Length: 141
Length: 255
Image 1: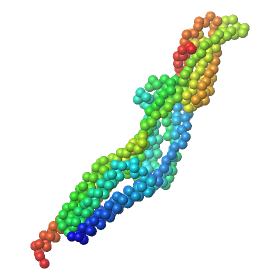
Image 2 (image 1 turned 90 degrees about the horizontal axis):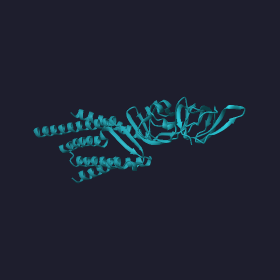
Image 3 (image 1 turned 30 degrees about the vertical axis):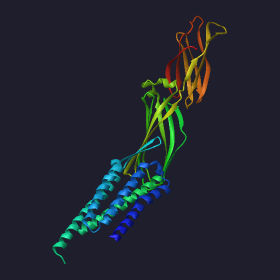
Image 4 (image 1 turned 135 degrees about the vertical axis):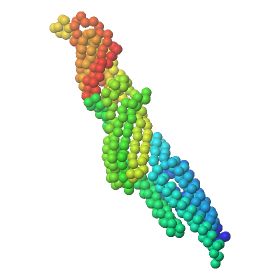
């Protein structure tokens, strides 16, 4: 149990670094005015937190069917999150007296496609796990 | 089933790599985009007032910018549309720079047809709506909109006629000269060249040439030859024929 917990913590920490700390560092160093987009930096934090939660949960429940169930839940939550964060693909920002609208539906479609594939993969993994368990219990070695 | 799982894993990984690559290169390319404006130039000819705004766009990123559309709507304070101008640039390739000028035109026909002739004589403030649309990397449509105000200086502001005086014509007992002091201020940003015909109703007509630089006051004396028994004029009408516009009559009360 202890190795599984420590592995989960390390994985969670690495994912947090990759998804939040490093992108924020790169954006700040490249001169992007992140202070002008507080909503989007907040969403980046939420995205990192949700991903880390599911990564840690899946790691703690590894080698069980719940690992795959959590991965499926993560894919669905991520799809809902991306639709919410990108406002259905239409992002608007007000900068001084300028109103900016960006149509990110193509980008959103790419993200949804990735998560849909992830959902399908997790579903197949869950079915594979259940069928292997069933075979093992029917034909014990 | 394991093959299907492996194929989905590979597809997901490849799609993630492409998405992250596209995101990073898009943001990098957007930071490499620069633009700027030149000095606004105003001119007037053939019944059209034109303001030309030079600008440049330097696309130093990895992706093309296509279907760039710059549109400007000029509206009076009452909300009436005075002018609509559009500049289209079909393509700004990656690594290239484009220099263009956005021309904002206000035609005399528009001013007369929309009953806005007061703009020739009274300063005003216009509301300008600017709208920029483009497609980035041929996949991401982007729109920017902004509004601002612009001062409109009347080319014939504070037009007035002073106290007229009568001067006899040497050797002519049947006619005499009426001297009409005539003045106005050119608050616009273009030079006013042409002639002014001043009609003293039921009395006589005089004409004078004008050449008034921008933001300059102008005054002159118009000579009108009339019969000695002509009655005192009660109303003056001015007709303007300039390189920028033709307009008249403008009724001017006596000062």
